[in-house]
Length: 452
Image 1 (cartoon, rainbow, N blue to C red):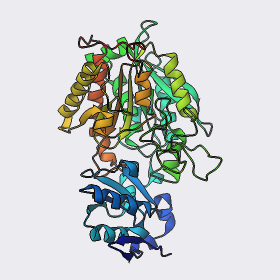
Image 2: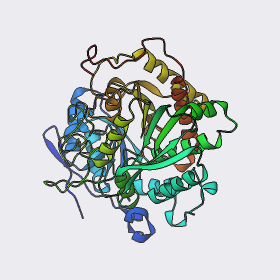
Image 3: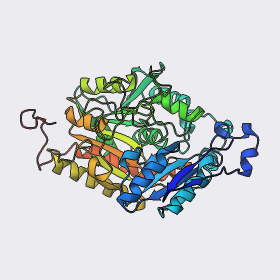
Image 4: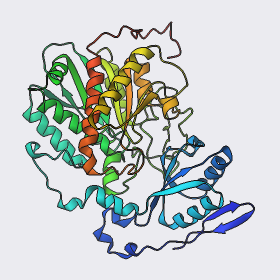
């Protein structure tokens, strides 16, 4: 079916056409996701001035696109790249409009369906294995991950405890693994969550990798043994369980939760805009159909509410909060919602520097690091800012590989190096908790810092 595509260029109107690619005609059941992404493309667009930014915003507003980076058109800036997933019926028209406006662009992914097939292969041929043969270098469905969690809990009773902190909107349990030697009642703790945004599959892969490495290296790695003896780790491999399942079964690039909205047909809330810290201000949307929708009220999502409740309950012990996202190759810390310096900046900045240095030592991959507002973009209602505001002195968000060549479709061949280098960074952050930071140790003082 043809779709009209119009762009205003110096008063004229350009009409785009539909591209028909030969592989669209292949048997539907031979493809993942019913072949829905055949012929779709990912553009990387770089507006060079404010005029081009405004033209690009208008252009993208005229068609239905899926913004990958940044995740909202309001965050488009000149000289900053924009990665956008475009449906096959609109690719030709968008290309023509960008050329007419002389806006720089390149096509990063020329056929999205093929890249999806390449990322995971055919799932039907996947072998289900026991924990001892579990393949940490492939992406796993929620059922596989949860079965693995039960097996890990069963086979490592002295180092692992598994529990649920609540249920998702669709009623699925929200499982967490506690790792650490049971040596004393009070231990400092580190919280790590993955899979807040459903389409970021490398996140859950890392959480599983972390658990595997922590348990397997406990006997021979003195650093890991010290961490497990002196700290507890709370690992939540899949935060957004409903969205993660939907990204496997229906829409590979689904981001939000799956909650229903009474007034709109659009479903879901951005689970990283739903926290009670400057909720629904800059960098979040109040429209339910937007990817950065903040929700009807703070902690409206049962997943967010459950994690917030758990962290509030254990806030005296949890000293570091780490949330794993993708993609951009960044290590971010507060603030995300404003341009300001946190009270314990020296300690957090030093921890971030040491972490990215450790990460770089693995394969020479460079990460940018700094406050989220200046390093990435301003966003309100984030879990990282909430954790910091609620007394967790070291709050970080990782944006893992890559910088856009694969985007959310990071190949399984890159799971190992990505997780290996990230493991070094997280171990470095955790090790820092066992040392005293002498440069402005953080104390959450409501009178001194009432704006926190």
